[in-house]
Image (cartoon, rainbow, N blue to C red; front, side, top):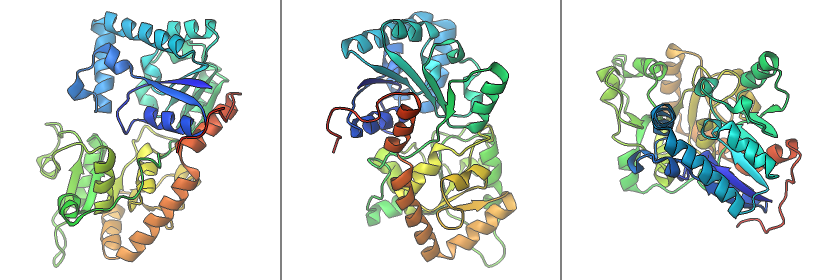
Length: 357
């Protein structure tokens, strides 16, 4: 099949992971980066959250660039003679665009890899998608029961072995990225609250934790004790892999709105072979075995206790991280997820081309 994937083209995006996964299955795949057509400033194009902010503002106040992007999508799909358009962030494509594609004989499938709080303004329910996939089981159940939508399915997040793999870390890089505990991503209030016990003065005789917070500049409302640990930048691609590998404990906290599943970082950390300490949730055991492939905590007090426990046990950390890497690369890849997506949507799983090397 010829597949056009709609979404950002930055290296860590789920959309580019889909392109690589589809090519590995033998399909022809291209990216349609609507952010470039809409006019998101280049300095913002590597920040996922900024995409959503810019998209909201443009759709609310300056509509013409957004509609121009829809036309560019239709033109690119026609130019490559697409059999399928895969929309990963459903907020970017209007129902009229999906209708036009369907009238031209192009199948459209959506995969929304985010929490339900992100699509309050989404119009995807009005679009004639062949199938819709969500990472959160709660979303699937809710849309089925509340709106009678029957073409929706659960599809978990995953890792990209081409990106999320163990990379060697030089002594200089270890000095730059190494620490006791590191976090990655946006500074939501609940994440800041969880960090507070780790920043408190340690018990007598114990050293203060070395903590690095990787991500965009912390907002002004964030407590200065948390802001002081900001590492100074967003890390992407190979640099993110090395930062995740160099820290002793990668702290992963799922968004509280992600009710029925786990986030993408769960799989990224596993694929990289980083030791991961994440909040305990029922769905986690469907992907990684707690205590063997991932470590969990059940609240702020337990978090602090688990951090001290695992910092003192480097061999146990290494064994858990390696077990997670093996399983993630075997079971939780874009190639595996796309096989499920295509089969569920009634589309050819394997393409005619040779899988990408």
